[in-house]
Image (cartoon, rainbow, N blue to C red; front, side, top):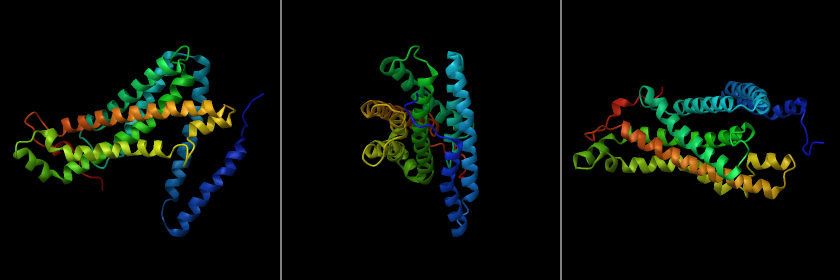
Length: 268
């Protein structure tokens, strides 16, 4: 007998009434968000249904290569989201590759360490553990990296005169861009800091809530949630640092000149 309460598709359909309410409010107030809400909801439904079927198959097959393939696909799609969220991006492959690479290295590295030393499933790459954990870590790292890069690129363009003045006075590229770097790092760290500060009192995270609803002892759910939050903070910090310093390297050259020609123009 299951220790959790099962839901029917009719139950889920009833919950869409709240989304429809948001759409009605958008129409009433002329917010022009109803189409975006509908597209986002449809995209979410299709993606989750497909992921559910995929994971069910992966759990039964138990193949390390298929698990790796899905993990790589997750990183690639998350990298695309980082690229899309930036107002000004690095030109060429760097616009996609730098953010995706920093996030993938940090997220995958932290996940592998956690699976092999802390969680310890047998085998360690078991998709039932590896893919959900990687997904949570990648999702948060993605947000931090995209915010850091967007802040850095925009601030470097706005403060070009000040940065070049510091370089003319003898500063190297890191010294000249330090104020901008600090701003970018703060922006990248803010989501995870806010998430940790609010967890427990303001909100119960989705993972912990899901475990409790499925019948797991609350104390065990707390331990898992603490583990995940610490892993997320570590991966986010590493990813933000790699992406930020990588962008600085790309936005300057060996002669410490500012190279804003390597940025695309702002959207719109």
